[in-house]
Length: 489
Image 1 (cartoon, rainbow, N blue to C red):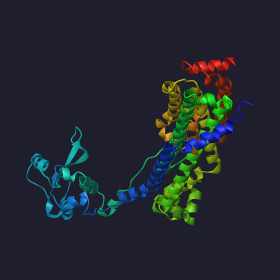
Image 2: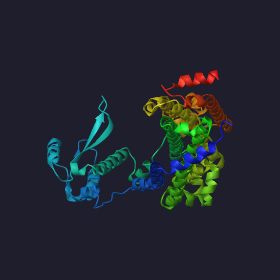
Image 3: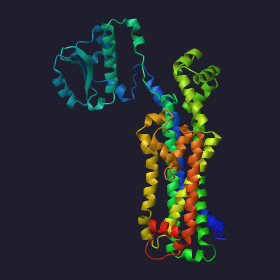
Image 4: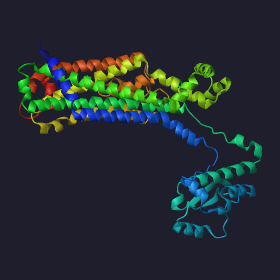
């Protein structure tokens, strides 16, 4: 049999590679980075939300903001004449004796600030008008010293809020009703038939599939290159000639490809395991733990079930007596857990295996076509171009069509749809379709079937020409010549 002895090559290659320092150190680094990213992904949203949710101005003596409030002068130039005594009293209360409206021109004050080593700032309120003299907008601009560059944002926000409040009061809004006018309004859009996702879910829809596909790309591409390098090294060092005395040439490539495939699969599984454990360990300290607790609330479960029927997050949250933000967090985790179903996981693993075999068989042919290691880099150029082209084809349309992917509907893009069925790009594009659910199951199955057929076709080419090129010594055999050799046999 032409494949007799492949198991010996498989076991030898597998054991030798996992014992190398580069594999061990590389795996540790990747796992540490994965754990860090997973923990930050879980914890950072809560930290950011806690920071953004603060409505009051607080003084922290250890921060730049605290230093700015505790020392230095604050000058006000109300050129727009918008603020009234009540507003200025609020600034006086906040900054104390350090607040003033100087008689000097703004230019003179800014010159003083330019050379000052204290945390000081001057804030100017001006207007923009149309040709008829009607005010169209107000501008709040601060001039600050080097030591106040971080705290000045707080000053700008404070004065801006006072100007906004005064504009509303001047327009007839009662002071007791002012807070009701400060509700944020967000405009969103969803293509008819698409999924109505919140901002967090849209980000997960965009980032998670890309992250998984990038990991697959790195493993498939890097280990495919290792296969080519291994075969080229053994061929150029004459080890291959000794190896061929006991096993057939086709058995060598099968053993090496399968061994590196198992190595890459185990590393991929380890990365996923570390990521899952990191999420689990950090869950109580981030949004995942918060969402898990929310999901235990029967009222939230009722609201989530109503989400699929009708109404918005705010409407269903109000009906259940909970806030829209809590319902949004719960819905995100609820949908997040639905992504990693056994069917989706098996589909991604199958795509990974087929993609690895497709690129590794090509790499094996390239490695066998060179007679000198100096020629390997030039020979691998087409392989590199094919890999980058596949990744580029998978995500070029996504980059320019983020809304479609964020809404869970990228199948309407013809270029994106083509990438699901083109074997060069499908190993990197199909995982996103599986996770996001942008393709019908039969289309996913068709894409996997086309990739499997491509692997069989490459395997047939390998079986026809590998024995001839592995024994070739001399000038490098070009990829086009390999195809011609396969056609003649």
